[in-house]
Amino acid sequence: MINVLFVAVGGAIGATLRYLISIFMIQVFGTGFPFGTLLVNVIGSFLMGLIFTLGEVSHVPPDYKAFFGVGMLGALTTFSTFSNETFLLMQEGDWLQAFLNVLLNVCLCLFMVYLAQQLVISRV
Image 1 (cartoon, rainbow, N blue to C red):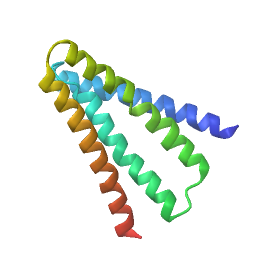
Image 2: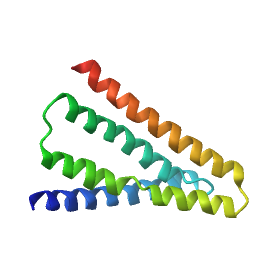
Image 3: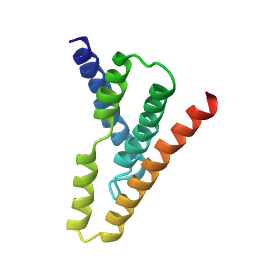
Image 4: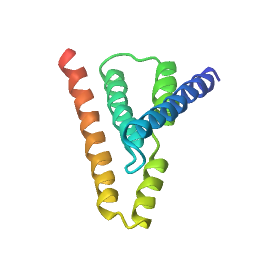
């Protein structure tokens, strides 16, 4: 039951961070491209790679996995937001931005997981 509390607290932190990062990115870059979603997905992918790989090479308590992996990162990164923003770009006829959004999110996030794993493995 304690893991549920860890997920809830981590989720609250992740959701708040996502909101603040999105607002910041809109203030910096405007609303023409969903940079906020891209950034939280890239950051979240890197952190997920770290947590997963640390769990593979050393003992990470289940409480930490619940807090960070399921709670915080689950709320920080959202595939539904990414999908909705991409669909809205397509509806607006901005196919280049939609394609760029998919390409950047998928490629950068996969690379960040790889990079995080390599950082952990090189330290073990």
